[in-house]
Length: 85
Image (cartoon, rainbow, N blue to C red):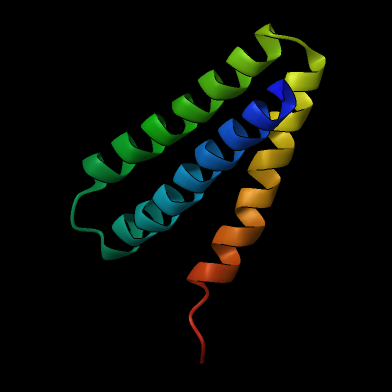
């Protein structure tokens, strides 16, 4: 049951990370606000580092399961957000 919790934590954190990555990329490409783009990037990376550090603090298995959730979130997010030609 606890491993399901860590998988969900990884999925939610990973989904937020990759959705913000897409927004962050658009901010860089638009060139309108470099300060906002750098701020979003710093926040996104810090949040992911804190999430994985928190999981690691609970042990190796929670870290591995949370990381698996992040990888699965990447697969799902890329599949859902892909623009069809």
